[in-house]
Image 1 (cartoon, rainbow, N blue to C red):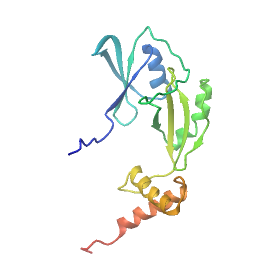
Image 2 (cartoon, rainbow, N blue to C red):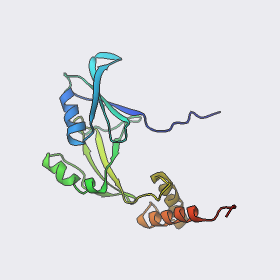
Image 3 (cartoon, helix red, strand yellow):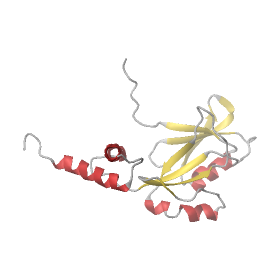
Length: 186
């Protein structure tokens, strides 16, 4: 059987509260430019807002002026979204605690995930949001997934429980070395 090969996330659509709450959070806090809005084409009583998360793809939000924000954490059930994670630069990540604090938004504090640092907080409707920052830059010609795949193999060979910075450094070295190896035509 042949696969239906996906190439990227096209968009993610969330059920939001009122229009202004959504704009204040996605554009006002997270800095995602508000691209456009139109009615929800499947339910004309709702609005449909479109935001750019920074890579030209879209986060969209269905809005209804009768829904109100409620940051109370929701316990995800099987099949529910646990959280959404967004990439930020190291410079931005270093400011996250302070900037969330300025707005009175409770958060997890910085969490070391071995290959990245993360911080978690809730959107106005209780959805868990993660801001993540990789601890490495992939070498030219490679993506983050290439480095992580190689670091995973090194981690397994070492018998370690999770990817650490040593695995990342060695993975990057391996990828660079492979690129520099002579080809048959050399």
